[in-house]
Image 1 (cartoon, one colour):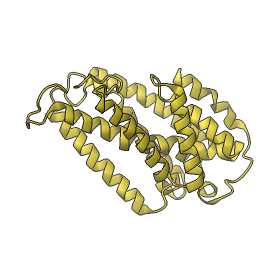
Image 2: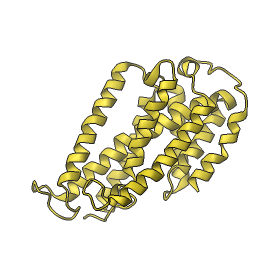
Image 3: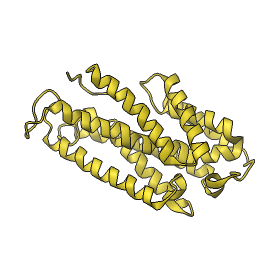
Image 4: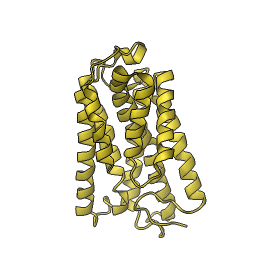
Length: 247
């Protein structure tokens, strides 16, 4: 269903651009309709591939079935980086203000990814001690916290705000671009309540428009996810798709 909803908005890309971006970041961005199609197609295709791979290797400790949602997020972020090769100024035109911001983000992703892999190697079960005597549930929290608070916001903002918003903004203006990308953003979260996701998309779009900063929209996105994650941890109901109850 999510693929269908996203696909419904692709024909809107046939409309000619009505403006050149009109200010700062949006005027510099050179994303095209083809980039939107590539991003959507690859994201959904690699999501399917990742899911099939994880089912194939689920007996491996690096490919717990419970982690099936994380691989698509990592792949989405990779797609965002690959797509930036089509942009004259590269990654910075996703909405990074300086190359220093890119360095910090890369460092966070690098360290976090290493933590995730190490935790995956030593974690036997969320309800059993690890080899190092650390309760499995804390490693579980660390893994999913990293994915939901850092990787997901950066990956999703890079796609929906960094690329898609720019293209729809030039064709339909600020308001409709925010609405369209927010609907597509909500559709990319099957299994969750659509309205809260739509509202988060709206606010992220407004933040991105006003600040012209991917870091700030991703930060807001991360705060929302962190709040939801903290609430779930507090209630011992970490209901991330596929995740076991830990308490």
